[in-house]
Image 1 (tube, rainbow, N blue to C red):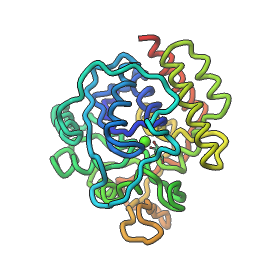
Image 2 (tube, helix red, strand yellow):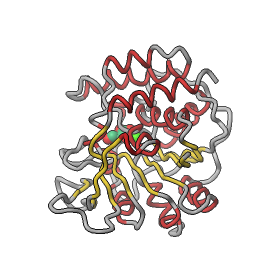
Image 3 (cartoon, rainbow, N blue to C red):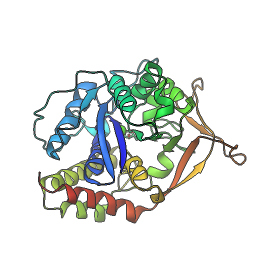
Length: 313
Ligand code: BDR
Ligand code: CA
């Protein structure tokens, strides 16, 4: 069982990442922290708490984090894909437990320092603001976490910009900190997540789960599909964030390659791009990895089975 902290901005695909983390027995979800990204911190924090209520896991602490990027101004939320609420088209119960009073970065630090060294994996599926702040707040967490497995970036493609992906482009300076710390970082970027399409067959499987969490998954995927179809050339939406959780649950579900990765902070057209250097074999001791190939059938089986296992709490 792998202990994780999920740092997220739900958001449809973050919500699926939460469902997977809550339902798969190979994951112990120690804490959920939230970051402004897809929507404001109030909205994404409320969404995270309501999802935990819906899956009967309000025992998991939720702390709210950064309300905006570290340095850059003008970062914009993403209502065109995730709606005004961040989860438009879903019905969720109200949360019944309070938000953890600590800042997200503090909850991350406290959790990593409390658990045995090398046992906690950080799984960021939003902008990297909280993770960068946590690394600066308590530098010892860098040597204590097992690894960072993040959804963000890409080796050859972007989405909000030709070469920049939303989570990295939202807070490039935070991403720079995270990619340049001395921990192991696995980038589950667009090259990988574009293989995780929720096509009609997948959505039908979700609709066939006869529980409330099953209904929630189906509503999420259907709404996500509608918005992606309207706003992009995708017929079936790429469900990015659960790919990072899946890679933690079973690394054999993705093919990862070691490659030096850095973050562009000065390019006029490439600000927020992850630059992966494939020119030669990765140097000895390279601690950044890119996930490049997804076992799609096993990925969707994993998501569906996790939601089935939650049952009707
Ligand atoms: C990422 O951006 C967000 O909109 C999604 O939740 C995902 O984390 C994909 O670029
Ligand atoms: Ca996200």
